[in-house]
Image 1 (spheres, rainbow, N blue to C red):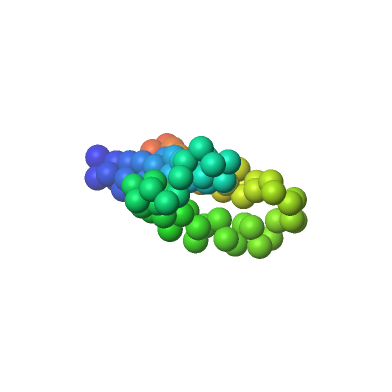
Image 2 (cartoon, rainbow, N blue to C red):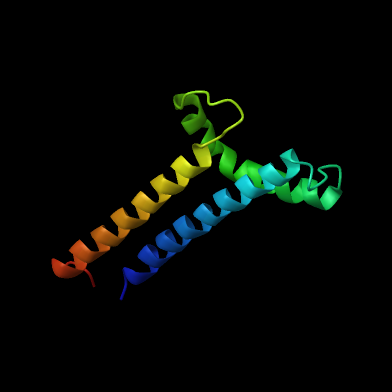
Length: 103
């Protein structure tokens, strides 16, 4: 169908972004605990890429959340918001299909 492509691209993009948030959080923890050395050029490049991809979405969440010290729950909140957006997009697609407006 004609509308399959935009919904597929949107859902795939949301899924990929949620994986990017997970990878960025894990990389941040590994660098923070000293498992990965950020002086390594490859590690720095990968972690910098994921930081630049996820930080614009995480920064507003961090500003609104209370300070919990060393614990950062903003990736968890962002993943929950992304999952809610995925459910919303799937619901809109379902309503369009049932309403006969999906072609």
